[in-house]
Length: 305
Image (cartoon, rainbow, N blue to C red; front, side):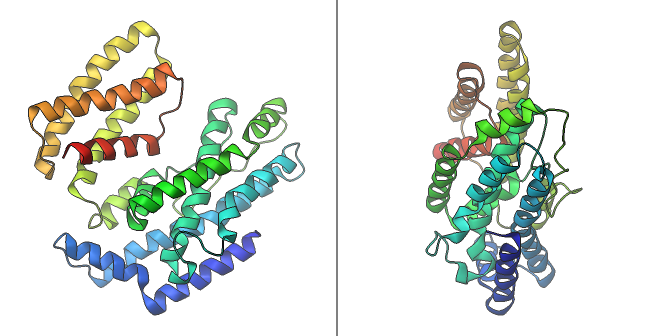
C-alpha cells in the first residue's frame, strides 16, 4: 500500500474521530472508571498522542523506502515494507476502520511492531536502525485500549507475518554491503520527545495502578537484560543477586501504588520475573525487548494481585 493511501486513510480516520468521537468517548469512560474527569485540554492532548502514533506509520515507511532506493537492499526492503502494511488491506480486521482513529490503532500497532522488531535485529547485527524512537510505552497503551484478547491475536499476526518476511536476507545484504550506504535516521511523530514521558503525562488516567508500579520494575529489568547480555558467566551471578534486591525494593514501592502483595507474593514475583529474563537472555540467547518485559511484568503483577 502506498504511503499516500495510508495518509488518506489516516486523514479520514481523524475526520471521523472529530465528528463521532469514538476514541474520545472510550478515553472518557476509562477516566471515569478511575474516578477522574477528562477536561477538554486533557482530551485533546491524549488524542494527539494516538494521532501521532498512527501518523508515524507513513513517516517510517517513507524513510525506509527512500533509504533503500538504488541500494542492494532495495528489492528486499520493498518486501519487508509490503509485509508490514499487509494488515491495512484487511476488510474485516480486529477493530473496524469505520471507528476512525480508534479503528486504525490495530493497523498502526501491526506495522509499528514489525518495524520495531526488524529495526532491533538490524541494530544488533549491523548497526543500522529503522525506528529510532522507543514506542514501547504507547504500544502498551494501545494494547490496553483495544483489549488483551485482541492484542494477543494481533501479536500472533505480527509474529506470523515476520516469519514470512525475508528479514535474514535483509540483514545479510545490509551486512554484506556495509559502508556503501546508510539508512536515513528514521523518525516518528515523537522524535526528540520521550514517548514514555508523554504517556505518563497525557495518558495517566488510562493507566491502572499496576501499570504505574510496573514502569519502575520494567526499567530495572531492561537495565538487567542489557547487562546480562554483555556479561560473562561469573559476572552474571552477581548481577542476578543485585537485581533480586532491586526488584524486591521496587515491588515494595508498588504497594503504595495500590498493588496489594504480601512478602511471599513479592518473593514469588521477583523469582518469576528474573527467571523469565534469565531464560530469555542467558539460556536461549534471545533479546528481552521492552515489549517482552512489559508483558511479563503485566502478567506477573496482575496474576499475583
